[in-house]
Structure formats: C-alpha cells, structure tokens
Image (tube, rainbow, N blue to C red; front, top):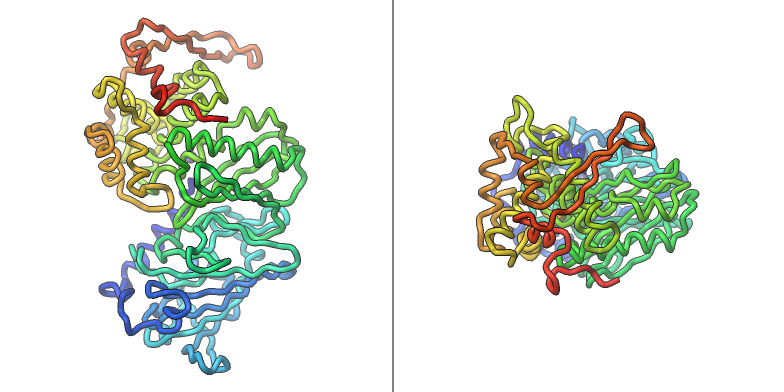
Length: 511
Ligand SMILES: [Zn+2]
C-alpha cells in the first residue's frame, strides 16, 4: 500500500478543511451548465489531457462548472511543475475569449472566476521533469521509457473534504505509439474517458504514459487489464499475463469474486532476477504495480507471494493510517491460504510461513495496541494474528459452518473494496453482519487499544501445528522452522478448514 499517498492526503485534508465550502453545492441546478451538458449533473469538471512523448509534458484543457471552487490543487509537492496556467470565464459561444494567468498561492491555484461562473483552465504539466525530480512512485516516477503518475499529480482540480458526489471526467490523448494506462474505473457513459469523484482523485490509482503491451482478461466477470512496460525481460509476455490471471483467479476463489469490477496490473521491468516490489494504490479504481527483474525466470514467478498479497489489498476498503495493520495484516494472513487453495503451495508451507512470522506480531514492552503501535511487526504480523484469531473464533462459534472468508465476502458484497475509503468500524460491522456474530468488533475492542498478548505456543498446539527447527544448509548459524500437522489436536478440523475452505463452498478454484 501507499503510506506516502496517505501522508499527502492528510496534509491536503488539513489544508482544505480550512476552506471547505458550506454545504454541498453539487446538486445546485443553477451551476455548471457547460460541464453538466458535457458529462452530467454530478460533474464539476471535464478534462482533456494530451501527452507529448517528446517533451514529456501533459497539456491539459479543463472546463469547470460554476461554483467548482476558487481553489484548485494537484498533489502536495507536485505544484512546481504546473506551467503556463491560464484561467477565464467559459464563454461557450466564444472559444477565443481571453484567459489570464492563474495565480499560485502555496498549495492552491486561485481562480475566483470558477466560483462565480463556468470557467476554463489551461496549463502544461511538466510530467517527465516532475518524475525525475520527485522520483516517488506514489506521486511521479520515471520508469525506464515510461512515466508513472496518478492523475492526482497532473490534474488540477477542486477538492472539498469528503466530497464523494462531485466528479470529474477526463480523457487522455496520446500519439507516436504511446498510450495511457490507469486503474481508474472507465466511464460507464462516455467512450475513452474516465470518471472519478473529487474525493477518490486524491488517492487515484497508479497510471502511466508509454508504449505498453497490454491485454484485458476476464476474471469471474471482472475486467483485469494487464500492461507491460517496455524494457528487457527474460520472461515472455504470455507468461506474465498467465501469472497475473492465475493469481487473480486464486484471489477470486478465496473471496468468491474478484474484488474490483475493473483494475490494472502494471508490470515494470527492473534489474536483477527477482520479482517483487509490489505496491497497490486504489481510489475510484485500483492498480497493482509489480516490478519484474529482467532476468526473472518462470520459477521466480511460481514462487512469488507478493502479487497475491497486493491483489488481496484490492479486497479490503482503504482505511485511515492508524488502521494500516488491518490492510497489511489481512493481506499477510490470507495470502498463504489463497495460494494453498489454488494449489500453488502445499499446506505445510502455508502454515510454516505463519508460524515463523507471527512471533513478530506479539506486543513488545510499551505497546499501546494495534491502533497505536505502527511498527513493522505489529502492522504486518500483529494484523495477521488478529485475522487468524478471528478466523479460528468464527469457525469455533459456528461449528465450522462459517469462516473469515464469509465475513470478508460480506464486506465486499456491501461495496467495501479498496477503491472506497471506509471507517474500520463500518468495515468490521459489515463483516460481522455476514457471519451474524460480533467477532471482528470484539477482537478490535480487545486488541486495538491494548497490547493483548497471545500465547502462540498454545494456539499452535490446539490447531495441531507441530514445529521443528533444523540447521539451515544454505546459511550457517541460521535455523529453518518447518511444520507438520497433528491430526488429533482439538482444533485440527479448524486448521484444515482454514487451509482449504469448506468442501463444495469455498473449495479450490478450477484451473
Ligand atoms: Zn501490503
């Protein structure tokens, strides 16, 4: 996930809360004739962006609705590369009406015209220059011959805290064989356009300009776009596409559906022989960005866990920063079982990883509970422990009738995926509704604000996890922990159900 983007958002929220307009004018019928005619009543902006591959600039023309707001923003730190910006009242019958330079005041670009009347804004965004200077994949980065930057970096737009109603529509024109790829949901009403709310724009998915090879595959009714950036790769495109598709199907198998109706997996060639370096950014759509080493082999793809981890992120709502443990813990806990159920790894390997990792998630001295202890161990493994305890508890209380996946499917069924931002209470309430229990909320009550230590040895024992440690052959002085199963253990059936799901209901996926 993308803490940097959240930092940007937090800064932005802090700034704009001071200038939030009273009430919502999104429904004011008198505003925005031109944009409403172009897009629809909820639309406050209609943008056309043209990517110039030679200069690396994006030339943007925007029409904004009356009352769209006198302050326009790009991401924090991305302002310097807005160039030659001009603004004026939008006289639809007179496209040659004069535009004046758009003033810049710290974070905001000030356009009083846009508060009173439909207006036009035109500027050049020096995107390649910004990417070279910022070099942060969450804002802008140059990736070989391509430039990656979410639309929040280069679309100058109004922003009002929590405004999930007002939307903008944007189109992107490219030439010379280059293309634009993004995880933003395509417009359902306009061809070759994307629609996004002002709120979602601030965490909009990874997007890129360049000469991509791309395909769209159907995953249980969801559309998954797969784009491969130019660069040397030992692996063939077909193998990368099959890898993304099988991992997406495995995730859909666990969750009963693929989490987003549309999303993008963006493969970026990198150095070395490994795959990994995956990140997910979602808001009004979602993108998983994966780096693939130029010398990576088919075996490296088969062995990788990162892509599954990232795809699982798509299945949980974006929550605020203090609950990062829920997003990371869920992906950490579910990933081995998604892979085991799909037959990519065996049950022993799935559990060995958890048995090795979970001790990192126990509270140390000074711990203040999961919500207030943002260390690596508590975020990834403390979060994973939370979901293991929830999974065991749901299965115990329902005599094996239900499991964690039923709660997670319930959250998805209520629209709670990574493309939306929800309170954690709302997420857990939706999960609890699906099981008819209060397991998630009770556990959060217990583990969120207090250390709440867990006897892992006892827990592993009841699940029938017998661990043994042997000296590592490859790394002297290191030990390898392996797991075997004790089938007579009191909760051995719970462990089996966690590993493989309920026969006939969760099951393994068809391949
Ligand atoms: Zn993650």
